[in-house]
Length: 341
Image 1 (cartoon, helix red, strand yellow):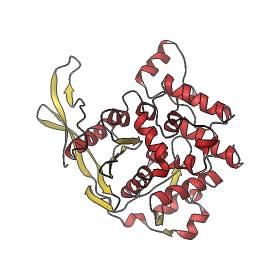
Image 2 (tube, one colour):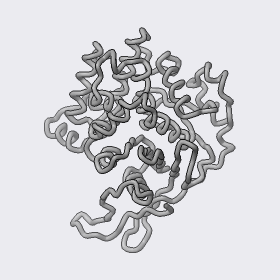
Image 3 (spheres, one colour):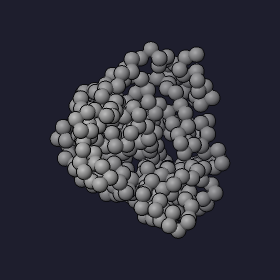
Image 4 (spheres, one colour):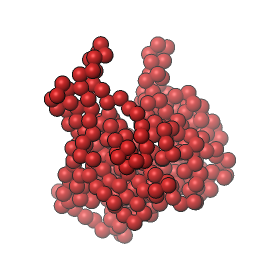
């Protein structure tokens, strides 16, 4: 069985007519060593992955050979999905603030500031939390998790890091008269519109496998450099200036406590967005370039180390993070190192 045949139920019949089917098993997919944990002089842990730097003309440099093999962008797709806010005029019709637009693009930590924006936006579009199909998970914020434990409480749907995206999708359905209950299904008009939009922004020439993300929304795969195409086409286009400004003006809404994208944006004039599966995309608006990092084993600390080191190497930003390996008593006995960059 070919790779693309594993998920036939999620393929859009309309896309099949216009996109060539390709066997992705034919592509070479060789990650590069990006991070090492060195404890008392010995390499204890290694993390492999891919990196790519691109401008509007194409890829400038690669680390690791992905051979155009497709990956799922996961939450890195959120600002691309949010482009429909502008396309359909939802921002004007609902009087959306930049904070609300930021929440629609966010993978937030589930803090009070995120919850309040989500509740207000849902109320503004005239829907209830029962309409949301993103599910529940513990807040990503360690402080919020501690509060839940101390209060013997439980998580709520507004702490789901994808709730903003789901509220946005429900708003688009209401605006266009589309069915609300089935908005997460691949053949729903909303999801077809999302795929068409992302395909255009990312300059996709082929039909790639589709699955459902953790929050239940369909997500299409693509080569890493195509994700960079999408980000550059979005954030450098004056039409989507509100999305750009939402990132620049409200980086804490995009992520929150101890979130890598928030750290990067608060320390620089860059735009950053993380995604599950070890992904992070950073856009340098001044240079009109974008960087993507994909850690193969999805280790969050390895991702942070690789991204921050790459930003320093590129002279985009010099962000301080801890790379020391310590005992529980605070004794430094090793270091986390970026390599191969």
